[in-house]
Amino acid sequence: MSSEYIFIIASIVAIFSILTIFKIQLEKLKANPENMQKIQLTFFIGIAIAELIPVILLFYGIMNITPVAALSELYVPAFVILAVMAFGSFFVYLQTKADVSEDAKNLVTSFAFVANAVAMSIPIISLVGLFMMLPK
Image (cartoon, rainbow, N blue to C red; front, side, top):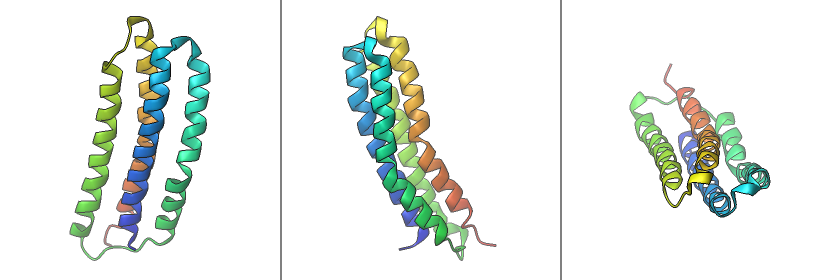
């Protein structure tokens, strides 16, 4: 399998696993904002476990990088990764607007910013991997 598809798979797996963990922990935060520290700890432990497979895929993809013959071969992989990133950001944004009480609004917003930053890390590295494949 070509490296650009490995980068796509790593991005998709990372985004959907992180968004699933985010959704679960955000519902707990909305229900009980006083447990912010425990919820964040559980969130980061879940993220560490969820990113194992995408990180392994990234290493595999970077180890097997070969330059492509034409730049047009990277258009579709780059578009798919950017679309997954947009979906992830939009999902996090929508979750901050649904059923949030006024006392938990600041906590939910800061939690969403952290989750969005973490969710975008693997796709950004995948885009860098695609740039490394540019023809010489």
